[in-house]
Length: 110
Image (cartoon, rainbow, N blue to C red; front, side, top):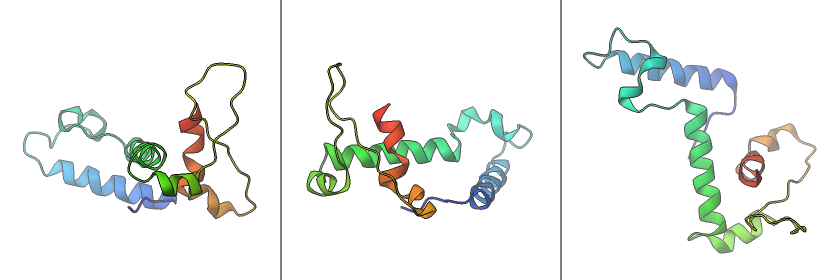
């Protein structure tokens, strides 16, 4: 699925969503932030939720074989943990931080 990487794209999508919520009768006068009645979360929250679901599918779900190739488990230490901590690799290219395998490591292993 496509997710925006640049702030300009995020702002454009948020504007579009804000404009679409104004078209619903009864909600025209409410601000975008108060639209809890529709159950709309921010774009970044939806993106992180989708990323976590995708990582779960790669690690424990139906795509385990591909997940073994994509992610590397961190060594288990003396303390108790969930057993699914992931290693964070370093890359020279800035564009790599937008990949699913890089942007979800901090959220998954926390």
